[in-house]
Figure 1 (cartoon, rainbow, N blue to C red):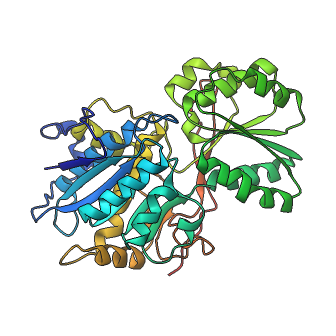
Figure 2: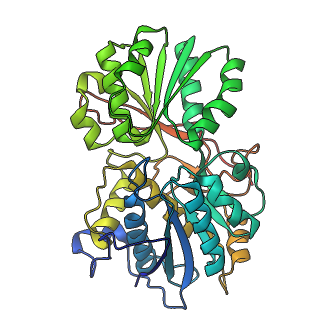
Figure 3: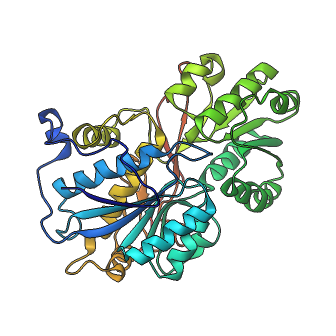
Length: 401
């Protein structure tokens, strides 16, 4: 069974596990292999519903996925996972408090979702030598060689943008980004030198969260000389940016952050504008494949009212199942050090939920940032209905031992 405790004002999000497994998902979920040992307490820190985005889906998906792991994967070394949840609300101070509570609760490891304040969460956990698996990381966490692991560098989208700009011979790129700490780090500290080295002009336009009408900001962009416009934010933010660009008559290439796309986006923005938009990602959302079929089977069996078209949900499924695979080498007592050792010595494996990508946490996936476990990303182009036309792995090579 799934055991859930909560800190930081966590409440019931209506995602309790459904009783039993529907027969039509049995072949996808695989045979039962129930964990029967004493529970292992694993932390989950998610922004949940904050001023930047609504990520409540992360907790709902994590609960369903943990139940699947406990029922079908034997938990961790035969021990069921007990999820300890704390909500950071995209607030650095609350994120730090969540991290401190995890240390006080003495959990065995902590998963950090797609947070806007990852460093504020990471620092206390790192100070306590707590094994941490981040969804995304940038800066100091990526350079840690002790106890930090990350599914991806926050800047993988930046790398995808830079590669696209080079392939199209772009002279100027404009990045329109939601103004939060993570994006400012990426676009003011990391990106400028890389674009300068490629001899590509980079313009960065930060816009506050909650800006409903971006026509005034997007009109100059549409009238300017940007060959590619990159939009970074949640779906509400991106809808406003896309509409502003369309009103301004922009006809160049648009590369969107994966969090921009949802059914809400497809309903609000015309297909004429979405068609041809380039979308990088780590999970093939909106495309039928073994990864998405397993995800859909898990949430159908153990979740409730989970929108499987949202990239945040599939990202969390990928992260939780990757944690189980990374910890697969643990035998005997499941301790913090046992988790760290298992991750560092794991062989290369398929990244769950991300058909075509591999992960390995031995520090060699991206040598300059040893905490990163995944090499490469997926790329797709949208059709006239805003749907992916198929995903292609990019930058994928074996991660050596």
